Amino acid sequence: MERKKRRVAIPSDWSGITIRMYQKFQEAKKKKLNEEEFNLEVLSVICGLEKEMIEQLEVKSLNEIVKTLNFLETEIPDNKELVKKVDWNGKKYGFIPNISEITAGEYIDIEQYCKEAEKNINKIMSILYRPIVKETKTRYSIEAYEPSEETEEEFLDFPILPSVSALSFFFRLGKLLPNALGKYLKSERMKRKKTA
Image (tube, rainbow, N blue to C red; front, side):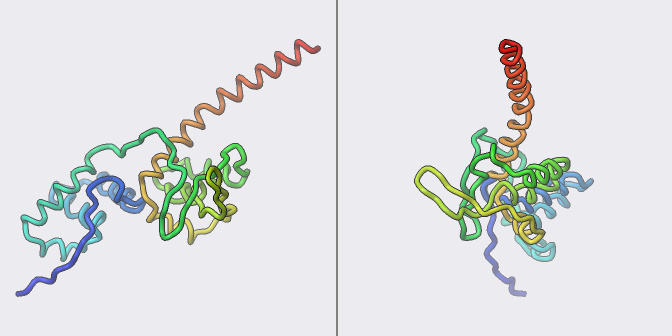
């Protein structure tokens, strides 16, 4: 019996992982699978292989692939620096350029989706990253926010690394804003007391 040969993309680090892959990998980790079942599930999710195809692999090849995917056992790197621009799907996407000018609609949707952030990463990213429509050396502007299930679905294939960077940034900002707002309001009250 002759085996069919097929090229398969095997990511060797987190930069090759999409939101969809990450979410399905997280689901697989929550299942009560033995090691062999888990490895089959991961190969299916990360490499896009069907179970029947995986079963046709030589043991040597299977072990090499599993070894290459060992990075999945590590935490996703978060370098604490926001990834502002991403080349993806043949376009350049930009993070909301001025977060202080975020619209009420963007903010409300992000807040809602953050209640189940891991489940809604793609939806959050479809708000935070949008195609760049104009760019200079130091600035850029992005498309206006128009919620769309189609766009949210497309963002399942957005890379996970800039997504983690954006979520970290947004959550850190969320922790800092109440403190900054509190300090600002306190200083404003003090100013008013002094002028009164």
